[in-house]
Image (cartoon, rainbow, N blue to C red; front, top):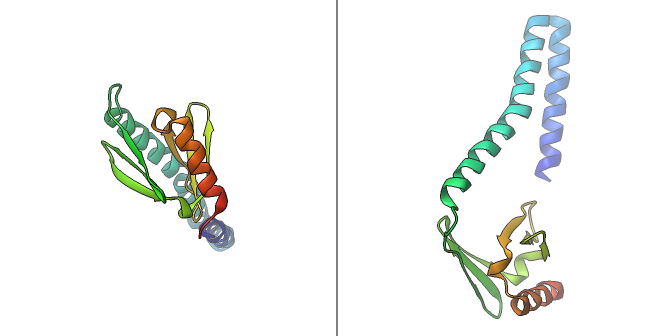
Length: 134
């Protein structure tokens, strides 16, 4: 939902910028240039900063922990601790050396090292997620 709103926002802003070009070319071009910097530059800058933060924080030898209960699993590491209820998850699967967890609401995708999810626990969590919320 948010991404659709954002797309509409940027489309309206582009139409306004093109309209401004008809009235004042310099102002319209400045607005289009600003939009290009924000649309292209900001996500790139955020990705670079996040990558640097993760490289500094998650160095080799970093200890991570996971625990599994009847209704939720928990993880803990240097960035904090979280608990994920099975009812709040849309899917959980193993892919390319990671376990990918997708919440039922939102667009985030969380990745965890496969070592945190023993086979029998992953199968149990997948079954609980497949049953859906109670």
